[in-house]
Image 1 (tube, helix red, strand yellow):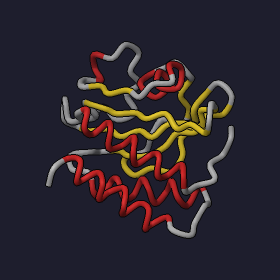
Image 2 (cartoon, helix red, strand yellow):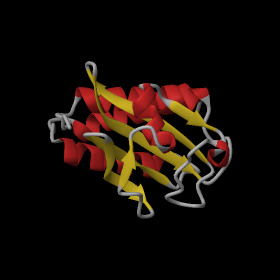
Image 3 (cartoon, helix red, strand yellow):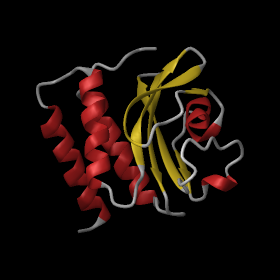
Length: 156
């Protein structure tokens, strides 16, 4: 299966999973579980939500995580500060990387927006360097759009 077909199928699975449910907590919990179950070679998948000038951990799958991340710090905080998705091949070379799990080697982070307002991020980590490609980034961005369209997410 091609990468685009995989992510198209994943987005369809998410649409079905969230059908008829708009609660952000339930939807982000199920979305993180779906990612953790379906994406190969990952060790963490979940969400951080923006509260003032920091991100706070939300629903996730994987080892316990950092509870709070300042905006601008680490990969997640950088995604919020810049408003841009982050695709990091080697987290140990990322300036200011926050090691919630020392096993993580690569990471992709997608900022979640409602119009111009950043709500938080979708964060996926892998124990393998260079695990994520541009195709993964695009697929996870589509996944996040489905989640946003079908959820009433918190506004900070």
